[in-house]
Image (cartoon, rainbow, N blue to C red):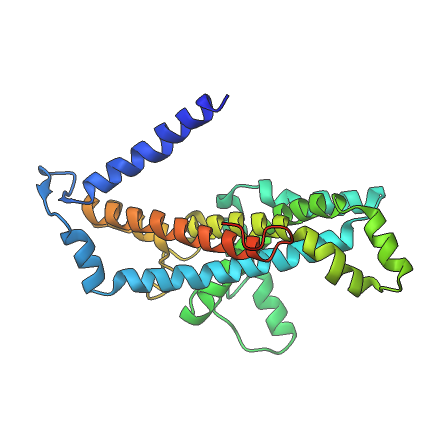
Amino acid sequence: MLGPSLAAWILFVFVPLGVAAHQSLFSWDMLTEPEWAGGANYAALLEDGELWRILARTLGFSVLVVAGSMTLGLALALLLDRPGGFFAFVRGSIFSAYVVSWVAVALLWVLLLDPDRGVAAAVLRTLGLPRVGFLTDPRAAVPTLAAVTVWKITGYAMIVFLAGLRAVPRSLHEAAALDGAGALARFRWVTWPLLRPTAAFVATTSLIVSFQAFDVVRIMTGGGPARATTLFVYAVYEQIFMNLSVGKASALAVVYFLVLCVLAALQLRAWRSQTPGTRGAG
């Protein structure tokens, strides 16, 4: 039963990863014959400090995306977990952003954030606030891209949290209410403990999405300003298609995969240790 899925994983994940690991040991510009480099590509990434800068930017971006999508997704799920056509329409409207392509989303927000003709600029002028270079200021670019990413994936987080909320037995809420627990107490002691596995899933998928960010970077900032938004996947793209350095690009891809695996494992372990019934489990 697992055969087709395992075959797809091997063909499209592990085989390309093995090829990248092999190519990371060579110096190759796709124009001449590859030359053996050993660990020189990894050493070069470490020596100039570029790897650490990319990792720091990507981690900061991921923290904003994971925290934002989980917070908004849970808040919307709690707010919209009600019967009726109106609430169903609102849920569908919020989720619709998730199914729109990244290219369309990025182009839309480029127009909205235009410093001269965008809606954001008009709002700032109306409020008498100074002009903000959302995509041109190195301090604002990463939070802006994170906000756009959160806007797109929050609908998915909301739907997953809604499924988790509806799996919570109503009898537990009724028993807590009879004991005098208010809404906040019921959420703290009944809903949230049972939602932790759902929250762990949302956090992990949001982390993966944030580490895979490319289209939004390529279209909205091109890695700038001053490389402030050069995240992991975009750095791989730069190395292979702009610098014609297949070896360094492959080395970055291998490091990217390992970092993502470690972060996902740590995140799942942290959530599992806080989930009732799994504390202390290996």
